[in-house]
Amino acid sequence: MKLTNDQLRQFEEQGYLFFPSLFRPDEMKVLLDQLPDIYAQHRPEIVREKGSDAVRTVFAGHLINEAFAKLGRHPRMIEPVQALLGEQVYMHQFKINGKQAFDGDVWQWHQDYGTWKADDEMPEPRAMNIAVFLDDVNEFNGPLLFIPGSHRGGAIDAGHDVSTTSYPLWTLDNETVARLVANGGIVAPKGPAGSMLMFHSCLVHGSPSNMSPWNRNICYLSLCAVSNHIRRFHRPEYIAHRDFTPIAPLADDCLTNPAVRVTDLPLAKAA
Ligand code: SIN
Ligand code: MN
Image (tube, rainbow, N blue to C red; front, side, top):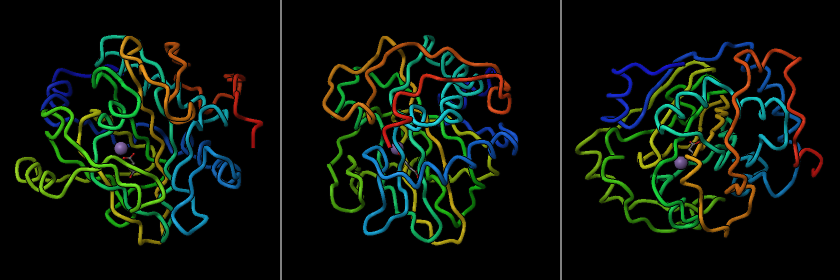
């Protein structure tokens, strides 16, 4: 998948690109079918919502499960990021965010690069987030909210919020968010399962809770330029990976072709 000049310009201005229905329903079904088995596991890589057994985040799903390992090497995700960053990429972080019906909690306003800089000493914001919707995302089930253009100011001072949700996050204060929204507004890209979002690591984003009866599972790849690898190994390896090997993309039909295998799953048996 090659990005057009218009898309490159839009990414530079807005800080994100949206590709509705980039993956087919049968490709997403392969992934969705894996979730009950993964979510039934209790292990450090799987964070539950505060006061509930609902899954908030599965870290390192690509090292636990073969279908997600394939997604982590999918050419529709890897190739455009390599082109944008002008370099091969490695997996800095991989997560499946559950945002389960009725239980999915808020993600406060934040920038991902703020955390990667403060906690992991990633030198520059030369890393990209890719989100694939495993379920339909609508206005009711906690869509991602973006502030367009908010990536242009680089990393913004943040405070460490360890109490609002079950997962500590470096979050932005209300005054900062209000100022950025006055400039860029807020968008909530919505679409069917299989849609993909690519967003800059300094783009300010968050998401409201899921009060609806519909799950909102989204899988995120955070891909970092190999030369920009993290310098500090402070967080658990399943949250901030230390394997800086460039990702070799698989064939385009990898999700549905059983002949394509990924057998190197170091966390598969640790449950
Ligand atoms: C994130 O920003 O890391 C997660 C946001 C979400 O899944 O809603
Ligand atoms: Mn984030």
